[in-house]
Image (cartoon, rainbow, N blue to C red):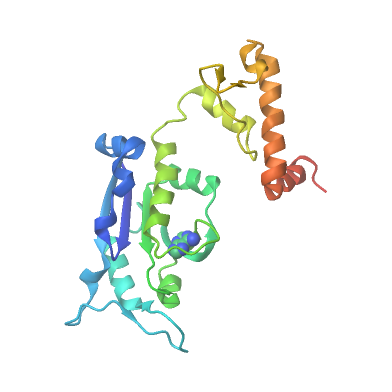
Length: 236
Ligand code: ADE
């Protein structure tokens, strides 16, 4: 079945953007997933087609109005049995992880509401049961790029780039670790040689070297991941 993505945005012309190329683009052309955009401005009811207003309590920026987001969501919410998850992209959301990408990919699709301005009226998020999701601890000018990140991460799983049993095995082997470094021909480039073990043909030695490299880089760059792994391997 086609995996369905619906993106609610003030900038529908930003899509498919990068999702029209490479793996996601080919997968879409092949009918593996579909993309529909909904222009939030189409749900404005006043002469000026306004969608935002100033925040109660004061402060900078503008807030996407509840009625606008609600009407747009009502127009796409197919309800059970389709029941696609409804997500709002915002820097105050829960961090998006590879596990979230996998669970999105396993479902029927997603409905993504992109925030702009300072935020989205919290009442519509609660009333519609939207899950707030962030792609990282930095602030983008809107949720569109974040929506593309989520979709790309889900679609590449869906599209079966991991089809090879090898790759799946590799992922479980390296679960929770950063990747070991990669090399291809030539064996020597500008005086730098590829690590000899990789040319040895000794598969056990290669696997051990890669694992050690993955562990070392994870410890150095991502002490948070390293600690989580240690906790999983040796629960208190
Ligand atoms: N919108 C603005 N910044 C964002 C972030 N970091 N993640 C998701 N949506 C956003």
